Image (cartoon, rainbow, N blue to C red; front, top):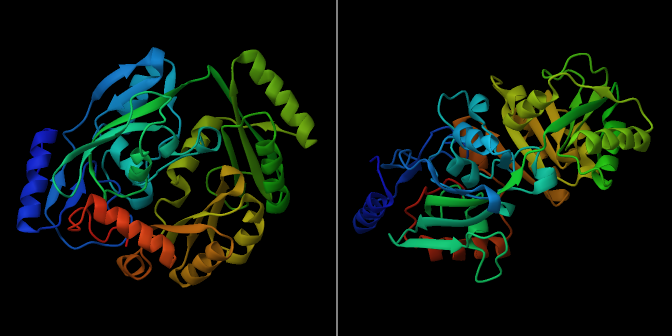
Length: 382
């Protein structure tokens, strides 16, 4: 059922609860292949819930309906010299789907991009939300102010919940100024060990990089990198940016080349464009940045790159590598998310590895509080 407003969505959820019928929440349809496959279910289509609800540029606050397409959000903010802090990603190309990635979908799957390095993931930008729980009740969490210290921080729970806790109907974000200039620099022909070391050095500096990525030899995004390229994205007004570039060169003691179309390159990294069209399973592996060279070498994936100074590895690997990927993530206090896989891989592996008993108990308690009958996107995570 396609709903036109929150009232209709509430009615749908209440009817589903009365009939004890689980359902799937859909909008742009670009992220339905993430997570364990779920059976054919009735759909609650919230794609019509879109648009800018309220925008206060002077207060750096923007309230959006969840079905608003990402390009529309970014376009409106850009007109006022602003942006979303977490660089929301569009993984449509990875999954080979034609649809419109939405802001609600980006929040639900925690689809952050390189900007997370400087401004944090979605949970650090989401100030407040409205939604409908599994009881058919309209709920709200957070507050539409940047500084808020009252109550439970419920908006954080919505980020990465994959629609299993609430049907989102309204999202309020803190937004950030968009610098007038940016530069993408690269240390070329550098092996992973030294390349990631360069990135970590920049990350620990006062340069406030907004993107740090490593592209290995054989990548399909940047040609002629030799053994690999360490990429650094810096932002600022003209004079401060010039000073940052000078400091970066002095800090690394290595030649830094300007990357043509560097901002477009980081957008491709954000959206996983290197992994579009591959028949291999695609993983996003969060690990300690210092372990990136060793773990990448041990997995030896046919396609891979490092983002977030190495704390995020993108990997395209055969299904036979799944056990190794998950075991390395666990051994390093990390997490491996199966972003794309065959139905067989998704069914066998799920979205994440099974949580510890203590974490499972906590997660189950939260789920029961929001959705005691298990109606919302059942099985998407578990």
